[in-house]
Length: 575
Image (cartoon, rainbow, N blue to C red; front, side, top):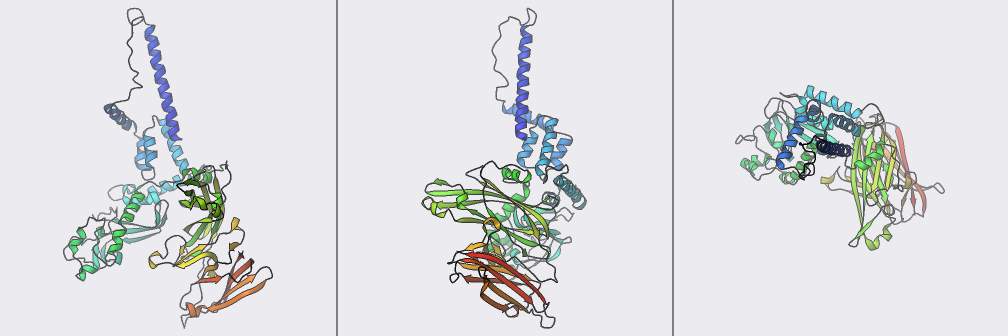
């Protein structure tokens, strides 16, 4: 809208200039004799239609920079320096008067307001609170907002955890930094579980090499090593063993000078990832699918046919204060618009999701593009197939609202929207509890390097949940499939003397047509995982022997130590 307003104002200015030119000509023609009236005039090119020279362009840009001063320059250079996008900055610099600038600033904050209909702007209030905190906490011979720590705090908020070494000193390197002991400058590592537009599990390192309190963000983790340039000091593990030379750290031209160690090869392969993350952190936070966001923050009416999709949410405990919420989207091929090219049918879906709290403040945002490709001759046979998208959201216990909007890229009017409240449970230490009982069509162990990361991965298991139609119907399995089910049990009692648990896990499958139990078995946690207060239950059951119909699986936990019981059940259909 700002660009359009600028164009309109520019057009008005052009019209005014043309009108003034015509008025001047008319006045000259009506002047007294002997001046210009009746005198032949020479046709000259219209200066407004002539392209300005490079020198004139430079003069115009210089005049524009001089005009942008005072409160507007302060607003651009200080207030919103870390959150304004490049496109917005260029648009603001090209506005021609203060009225347009005031309107731009109003729209700037309105675009970021989580609740546009409210007179209060929570985003703006939080932004200026962060600036005040940065100035108080991170000042180092310059205002705190100008420092690297102030920049990251203002743009992305408080980190989930901080590993602080304010005095530096003795430091035992982790293996990924080469191992061995050294001495460091003061440094901090900020950890974010998730940053929208950047990624999951982001570590940002700040180093104070001047010992003056001015911590700067660095890609090179060896920069905190105070002995890096001291011969024979602060050797890595391989250097101590004589398998590497310290001077090799400074050859190769890599991003980091960590030195050889047991995980050197892995560090080399991650250099581009670190550079990419660093670049994303320097950019202003922004929403990729701005057109889909409008369906979240307003009551915009869908003009085309609704884009139907199904969503499932589950709960998995990470800590008492952090619960993982796997969100699974299922989109059927028959609801996607495909385009055929070179014998391949391609469908593309944009996904935008947002989690807000009770105060309508955004907590997390996720966005993804899902592409489905099918050989053109097989498209008709795959109409009943479905594509599944998965996103794991770490949240604190409490009540949230989840909004998800999807768009069929090949049919822009084909928009789907899903809204639900999600009550994230709180797991108390003294109460027996479980995660969601997940029924899955795929379940397998993952390699050690993929544990806890990747799509559909929970812990050391890749588990793809089966999603029901409409979110209310039982999930459907075919007789030639296995029924995979997964659940975790938390807070088992531990015997003070034996240091072991003593719980009985009972599995039961019931035919809901006649309430007949067709499978019943049990196991003892003392024989499978005896010393833990948490167990993971993973089982697969062939469905070949079951007749088509509706069934229910129930898992009962009877804790012999705490004398507590709990049960979870889930229906399913065999066709």
